[in-house]
Image 1 (cartoon, rainbow, N blue to C red):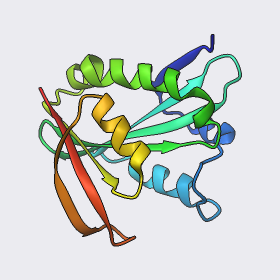
Image 2: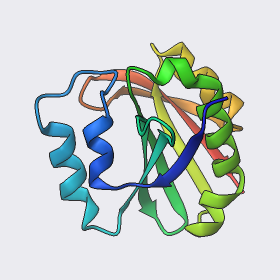
Image 3: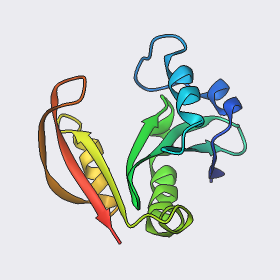
Length: 149
């Protein structure tokens, strides 16, 4: 059994993080550092407490009072821990995150090309709200999911 934990983000977590998708050198670190000083982002880390590997970075981007966009950046090793990560996220999204940060609405946008992400959103209790055409820098269609408490 792996020893997974959801922890507040610390700079050192990036040292053991190998993102699934390629980012230009330093881009991820720079984006996180520039966001840390604001009150609009909350960063959390899903990590293996035994190996200290960062399996995913989870960000809550505060859109309005009580509302946040959930962003998950998986590592290359994420696939080896899917069930454990799912259990941590499910528990966190169903209580702790909403209470700790006084959120009544969580939402996520997922590329319609990423079927696995859409399945995860549904399993985490998010409900489909619609399609956003040509959304984001990739100009792909994204499905919008939300969880309202």
